[in-house]
Image (cartoon, rainbow, N blue to C red; front, side):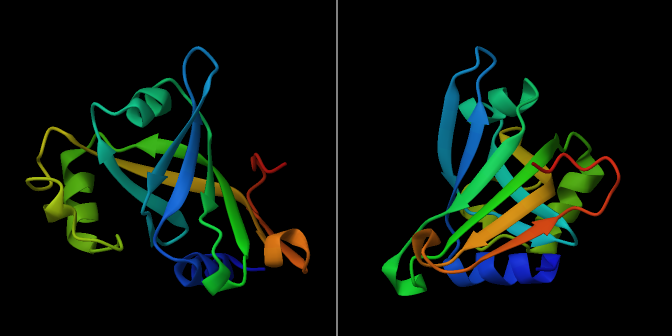
Length: 151
């Protein structure tokens, strides 16, 4: 499976997925998000004051798991990655203007300079698609970089 295939499956499975992080105390945390994609990055907008933002600031790696639904043949997509918090105003404006999310961020934030808007760029390291709740075939994608953190 190539990265464009991963993105295609994510779009096919729908806009919502679960983002798993770990708190600084080592406790798991799960949140529903609606990510977008730019190049070979998963893009997330979240609240600066959210628990997930705190977890990401503490250095939590992430796992995304798309919602399993009968309408999509119960296929499961997982993406593992390394998040980078965007703290650059220019990059924030670029992401805002890229229109990469499956929703309008203006419905949630006042604009790219909103102090509560935190962009997160996730560098994917591993993805797997499991058809029909794992009863069907599976496909895997690995980051091709030498410092890949894939399992």
